[in-house]
Length: 405
Image (cartoon, rainbow, N blue to C red; front, side):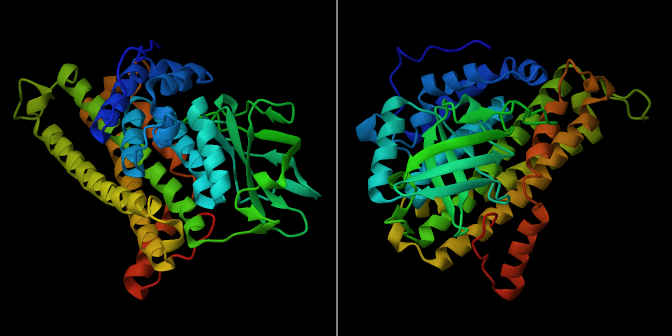
């Protein structure tokens, strides 16, 4: 992979400028995305690219050298990067969530300290977070908390500077989040991520051995008591919309790859009785592209609507958020996610129908889009997202905040 030197260029100052910067990064990533996927190489160079381009501090405060952009722009940036490489789009999206984690659940003092730390240092986040399993336990040892156990998934942590740890406090059952340096003796990565898709996300296991943090670093805790706000529960809609945006980017890239192959290499069918001179004149090919593009535009419009509404809440006063506002946006995010999963899987599957048998060659690599979408869209059952929307429509019920809603 080649990198582009942005050191001599002025940093973008507008959302449009940052989206264009993300498109430039995607173009670099796309040059060897398939080769890197096949090799399952640890994406250290790719993370350096994100740092050098300025994308890592997109949400960081301007006073510390960040771009001070909104989540609406961040979601578009994630989507653009995912067009070049779905794995790196996911890593960047998770980074944005974990960089915002202190703002989601932390105290004002914690927010200020974390945002200054990562923005001034241009630091990259990973997360060892899987609240479905109570596999990381935390002991209260007076002034300190000690994390011990194993997490099955630790997306991005191996290539990160900072890791968000999540565990269960012994004796209370409460979940505690803390940010720690990724490179330390107490954190050992399993190097066991070898899945069908999203292969460069470093989402394998991690063993945590006696990692100590002061109680003052327990996100949102004051005098060992969590300071609860409705705003805390925006963590799930925020990450679910990260998913929807990199799914959309992958699907857009799949359709673009299918279009490029079709115009350059697909041959018309000579036995149809209405023979054409080129594949781009074939009725069934035109029909398929028209159908898939229309569906993708519709999904994009829904995702963009969710982006705008959730971004507005994320940047509003934390104390002002109501459960009703949270519930309404959660329904919209659920609708956007289910729609782009269904559409993205259809696009990444049906591109083979319009490109032809020769497009199944490994050297072409059209499989990467379906593999990436299929793998990550299993994160949590999409049927439950449809049910959330159904309950809202039929019963007027808003989703109750959980670790997955």
